[in-house]
Length: 82
Image 1: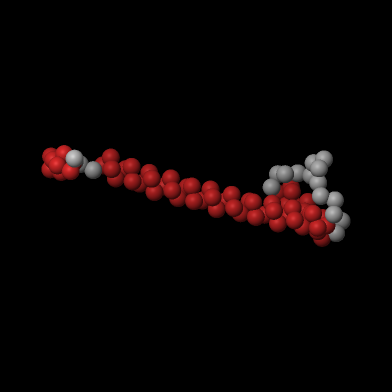
Image 2: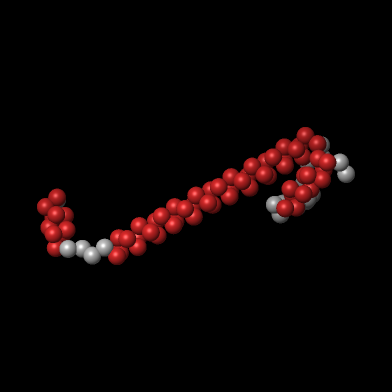
């Protein structure tokens, strides 16, 4: 097994894609698959991190809004704006 095959098998195993019935047979295809798998995993990780950050910010905003003690003047201001 050469270096390209070893890296390809490692990436396929780590990402749980496995080495099924359909796989790349030439080195060029395997190199493409390695880059594609790694870029996909990194992209999904970044998207997941962004989603967690948005969820954290939204949760903080909800807590602030629910903890806000509204006053009579606030309601009068809302009615006056309409």
